[in-house]
Amino acid sequence: MIPKGLCQCGCGTATKIARDTVPAMGYVRGQPYDYCLNHRKRKRHTVGWWRTCTKCKRTRHYTAFSVRRSEFDGRSRWCRDCMTERVMRWRRENPEQWRELNMYHRALRRIRINSQVVERISPQVVYERDEGICGICDRPVDRQGFEVDHIIPIARGGSHTYENVQASHRRCNRRKHDSIPNQMTMR
Image (tube, rainbow, N blue to C red; front, side):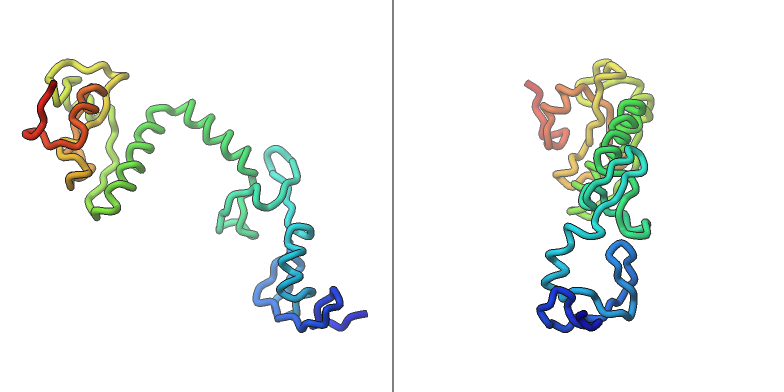
């Protein structure tokens, strides 16, 4: 029998004291670990690192679960496959909300670099405000096929606010690219 405080594999290395209690790993705060650091790394994938998804009831390795700090062990209750399925179903059921959310996060990523103002913009509000007229070519725009165009592009220092956006045709918006309105020439 190997005394507590020494590595249980028999290498004779003294083990450290656990700082936190982790039931899945068998760690108790204030008690020495069962294995030294090198052997704990090897055992990591065999003991205590399996969980069961509460949705599909499959037992999977802990890396199949997303990190979620609010959970007791820091991992999500659903596996990544079940979470992906849930998100994809929500996207199919809520296309307008998904479009708005996706547009907001894309703008947020681009603007974060320039430290500019970001506002949540609803494409439908922009369409109704502009009365369905393209801000670039002044022709009517289809409600399903329009895009929200930044008058002063984000790449040129524009903000993602209602004052800086307009409804536009997809083709017009692609032609405009990142030019400012007085620099743009339509072909």
